Length: 564
Image 1: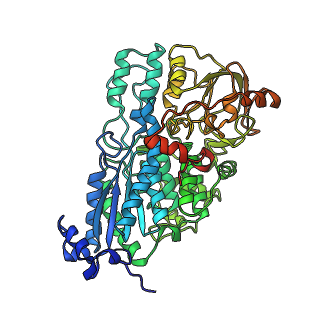
Image 2: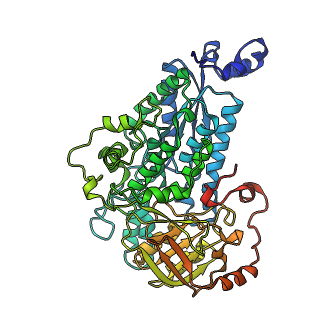
Image 3: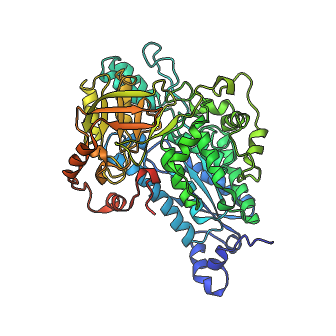
C-alpha cells in the first residue's frame, strides 16, 4: 500500500485555505518547493551552559543537509537541557529529572502543532536522551534518535600523584574533591584534575547515565547500531548525522513508525544491554518511562529478572577501567551484543530503524583484535547483572542497588539520617561518617525534592575519603551514573509520601541482604506503625512554578517518575 509521505504536513500547508501558513513560512526563507516536500523536524538541545550538547547545532546542520539531499524539508527545533554535572549538590540539581519531561513535552508540542511528517532527535546530556526517545513513542511518526557522543577522556599534566597517569572523567573530579577534603592530595593536584578532566565537547565519558541510555537505545532499535558510540569530537559523528537525515526520509517514505518497530522484547534487549555494561541505575527510571510512551508496560522487576541471567562483560567506569571512547574503539555495543547472542540472551529478530534486525546488526559488526574492554563470555566480570531490585520494610515498593563493581552482598550498620543531601555531604567532609555506617538521605524523592537529586557529591566524597567499601548509603533520591559503592536509591514509597524511610532514626540498625533481595530497618512492625502515625508532612519547598507542577503530578520512582 502506498504511503503518503506528507500526510501530516499536507493538512497544514496545502490548498488555498492554507495560504496564511505558507506566507509566514516564506517570511523565513521557505519556498513553494520546500513547502511541497515532507516536513521533517530536527530537534536538539543546544545550550550554552555545558559541554554535553555543545555540538548539537553542527550535528543538526548535517542532519538537515541529509534530509535535503534525500528530498525532504528540515525544520530546526531547539529546546532546553539541565546538566547534572554542573548543578550537582545544589538546589539546581532538582531541575535535572524534571527537564526530561520538559524536553519531551516541548518537542511533542512543536511536532504535533506544526504537523511534522518525520522527526530526527539529537540528544546529549543524560535526561535529553530518554526525552528524545519518549517523544518519538508519543508521536509515532517516522523518526530516529542520534546521541551527540561522549566527551573524550582527559589526562593530568602532572605525572605524580593519585590521579596522574589515568584517563580522567568528571567522576574523577568528584572523587578528587573527596580526596582533597580528606587530605590525600594537594590543592595543586586537585586543580590539575579539575583543569584536565573535561577536554572538550560531549557528554560525560564513562558508562554513566548518558552513555548507558545511548547504548540502551541502540539495543532498543531506535538509534542505528554503533552511531551513538562515536565520540562527539570524532569527524565520523558529522558523517552519521548526515546519514541520519537520509535515513529518516527512508522511514517517512515507507511509513515506518517507532511503535511499528519497538516491542516489549526490544525493551528486554535494551535492559540486557544496560546490565551487561554495568550501566546506570537511572535506566530503571528511564526505560519504564520510555515504554509507557510506546504503549508498553515495563516493571522494575523486569530488571531484576533479567539481571539474574545477564553477565557483566564490559569493563567500564565508574566501577571499572575504561571510558566510553575506549568502548567505541573496542567495537561498542555490537561487540557486547555478540557476547549476549552467544549467551542466548538477545531477541535477535527485533526490528531497528535501519531496516535490519538487531541480530543482523550485531552479526555484521567486527571485533578489533586484542581489545580488552569487552571481555569474552567465559571471562565475564560478574556472572549476573549490575542492577538488583530490593524490597523490605524500608522499601515495600522497591528500590535499586548497583552492584557492578561490588564484591559484597550484605551490610548491617547504624543509620545516620539526613533530611537533605547537603547535610550528608557536610558530614562526610567533616569526617563524621565512620566505617559500617548506613547513610540515609531522605526527602529527595520525585515529590519530596522535588526532582530526585543525584547523590554524586556524597558518593564521590565517600570514595575520595576511602569509605566507599565500608559505608552503605540509601536514598529516595537518585544516584549519578558515575556513583559507585554499596548504594541504594529510588526507595518507594518516598519519605514525602509517608514511606517507611521517613520513620528511620539515627542509630537504628539497618540490614541490607542482596541475596535475599531485602532492605530492612530492625524495628518491629508496631514500632514502625507508631512512628509513622506521628509523622507530619514537611512544608513543600515550592508552591508555584515548574517544581511545584512536577511535585503534584509526578508518579513514584518504581513507575518511572512520569507526569502523564
